[in-house]
Image (cartoon, rainbow over all chains, first blue to last red; front, top):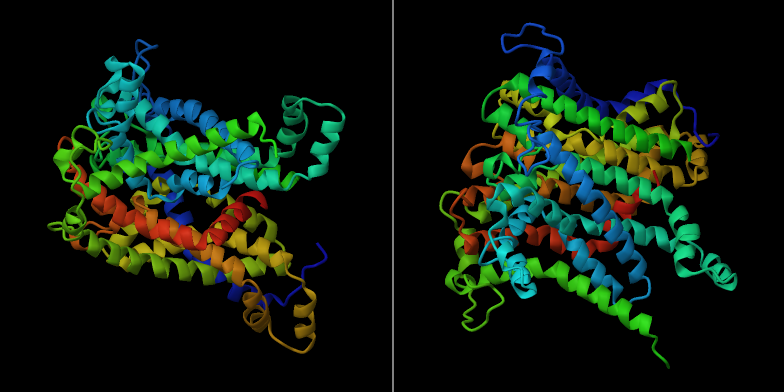
Length: 298
Length: 277
C-alpha cells in the first residue's frame, strides 16, 4: 500500500499505547488468565486437560442419555440446537424480507418495525418473549387457539419440552432485522442492468435469484452467518431474563454462557467456569478466523 | 395504471410482517398502560379499557431499585464509555491507516480477533482485578471495561474510514512541518465526523443494552444499571407484568429514540463495520 506515510518511530506510542494498554489490561490479560485457570485444580495444581474431560462430560453440559428425547440435553447441545434452528430461519427470513421490500411502498416503516428487536436491550427482549408465551396473557397461545390447537395452549417457558424452543423461535423474531438490514444494503449495490439483461434473456425470477442475486450477495451472507453464529454462541441475556437467572424448567433452557456464569458466580467453581469460557471462546475464534480470512482474501 | 397482482401480494406480505413484528411490543405497551386484571384474559380484549400511567410511576419509583435511578446510572456509565473509546480508537485507527511499521498487520488482525471473544472469557479474572483495585460496584471500573471492549470494533471502523480519506492534504501539512499528532487532530479527525457519529450511536447503544458486565461488576442495588433492574423486579414464579412492562418500556425508550432520530448513522455504522471489512 503506497498510500501509507512512513513515520518516525517515536510517534507510534502516542497513537497506539492508550488503546493497547486498555486492551491488554481488560481483554487480553484476563482472557489468558482464564485459559490458565482452566488447567488448574481448585487447589491450584496443574492438572492438564482433566478439567475439560470432567466438565464437558457433565449432564449440565452434554446430556444425551436416551437420545433422541426432549430437553434438557445440556448447555452445549442447546447452543447447537439454537444454531440449527435460529441461523437458517433468521437468515432466510431476513433475505426474503429484504428482497420483497425492494418493491414495497413504505418499506422504511416496515424495516423500522422489524429492526426494533435489534435495538431493544436483550434483557427486555427475553422478558417480552416470556410474556408472549404466557398461558393467558400471551399472544402466541391466542394464535394457537384461533388456529384450533388448544392442546398447545400453555405457558411455554414453564415446561422442559417447550421452554428452549419458545426462546429459540422468539429470538428469530428479535434477530431477523440484522440480516434484513445487511441484505437490503447489499441488494442496493447490485446494478439494475444485471436484472434487465436477465429479463431480456428470458430468465425466470428463481433462476435470476440463483444466478445473479445470491452469488453477488455472498460477502454479505458470510458476514450474516458468522455474526449470527457468534450471537447464538454468546446468548445469555435473553435466557437470564426469561428464566430469572435460572437454567429454566429442569435445566431445559440452559446455555453455555449462562452455565459459565452459574459456575463462577453461583457455585464458586472457578475452574469449571474457566473451562466453559475457554471452550466457548475456541468456538468463536474459529468462526472469526473463517470470516477474517475470507475478507482478507477478497 | 394497472396494478399487478404480484404487487398486491408483496405489499400484503410486507405489511403483515411489520404487524407481526410489532405485536409483541404492543402487548407490552398494553400491559404497561392497563390494570393487571384487564390483561389477564389477553391484552387484545378491550371490553374493559382503563388506560393509565400508574405502572410507569410505580416502576420509576420501584422500592429499593427505582428504574429512574437505573436510567440515570446507565447514562453516567454509557456516556463516558462512548467517548473514551471513540478518542482512543481514533488514534489507533489513524495509526493503522497511515503509518507503516513492522508488526502492523499482525497487530491489526490480533485486534480483529479480539472482537469475537465472549464477555464470559474475562469475567472471573476481571472481577478479581476490579476487586484488587477497589473498583467493584464502581462506575469507573465498568466504564474502563466497556471502553476497552469497545476498542477493537471502533479501531477497525475508524481505520477503514481514515483509509478512504485523501492523503494529499495531510502530506502537504507534513511538508509545512506539522507534527503527526497535529495532522491527526486538526485535519483527519474533523473529516471523520460522520464516522464518529456512527461510532457514538452504536457504542452508546451497546453499552446501554449491556447486561453481563454490569451483572458481574455492580452488586449494590443503588448502583445497578437500568438493564439490571428488570430481572431484579421479577421472581421465578411470580411476575408483576404491569410493573415489568412499564420498566421495560422506560429502559428501551432510550435506544429506540436514538435509533429513531439517528437511524442514518446507526445503519451506516452497522453496515460499515460488517460489510466493508
